[in-house]
Length: 364
Ligand SMILES: NC(=O)c1ccc[n+]([C@@H]2O[C@H](COP(=O)([O-])OP(=O)(O)OC[C@H]3O[C@@H](n4cnc5c(N)ncnc54)[C@H](OP(=O)(O)O)[C@@H]3O)[C@@H](O)[C@H]2O)c1
Image (cartoon, rainbow, N blue to C red; front, top):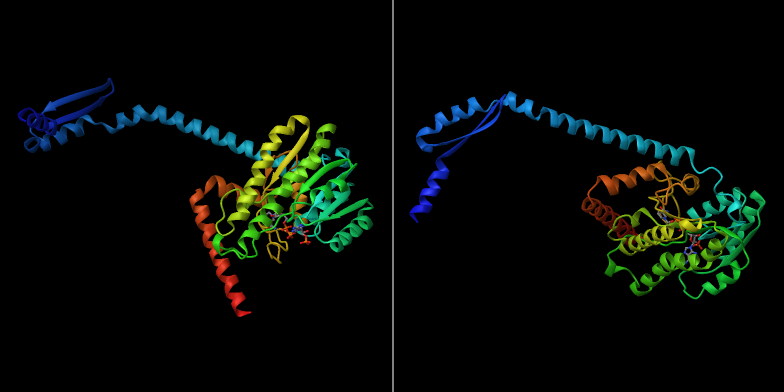
């Protein structure tokens, strides 16, 4: 007990003066009673702790850390500028031409982003296989492409919400030399909603998984083998920015799109050495029937504008937001902002939209 008390007093009264001199550092230990010696001790520290010497000592290391950080930042900036120029200005030349294969296949081709892919690929000379739900709408789009771009078209009417449709699609694709497959078909929520409040939840889950996930895997199963045989081909899988981070109140949709992103990136790694490009496309908002956005803006472009930009990234980026303003938004939400903040803001935004939707529905 005595020993420990002595130790405690000693440590309280021990004063360590750090003296930095031009000759080097010297440590001074002096043992004094802290109560009586405090002013003298402070003075001693003041005299021996020369700030100017201290700065001189750390000046060189700090200079090199700063210089190295600036150099790395400058290199990173130059890399970003060069790759941005390569993606958004130079593009991929004539990569997407019928040299890949005569036919392009687009699912969900009668509206929105899918219809724009169909038009843009027909404009580039591909014969078009259009797959969607309504035969009438398919016929309209097919007629329009034939008359506008003088290309051959075929259609298959199927509901991707069902799982027994693939033999019919397989028969329809038999014998076609397919250069590009666009797995575009997808559905979202009618309005943002809590998981357990979704109307007809059991059916909702099955349909969304069938349309958003099963279609992508099964269409790839049907088309990829012949691409591998010919050592060329492109598969574009339309995921969503909602697949880059969890989006509350659109949870199932967001999770299905994360699946599409992972599926595409994994498959690309497996088959790029066979000459196949598989790209994961993650758009933010595009003005289509799905989003009910009627007035396009810079960050919510028309599907035509979005698709024209996206196609320049094929072969240059394996995973893309497809459109420069969306790429900036993707960087902010995944690199700059903390994920918890992104999830919190998504929840707030969707809660607001849900409340608005339910209010309007009550008024009707
Ligand atoms: N719009 C956006 O802001 C946005 C953002 C990120 C990702 N995406 C993704 O982009 C893709 C296209 O979206 P979009 O906005 O263009 O959608 P959209 O305007 O609603 O068009 C969807 C297309 O898919 C067809 N389709 C829907 N359900 C089908 C089913 N069960 N079976 C067969 N065909 C079906 C539709 O045909 P019908 O006309 O017969 O219904 C239509 O041709 C989706 O995968 C979506 O998740 C969109």
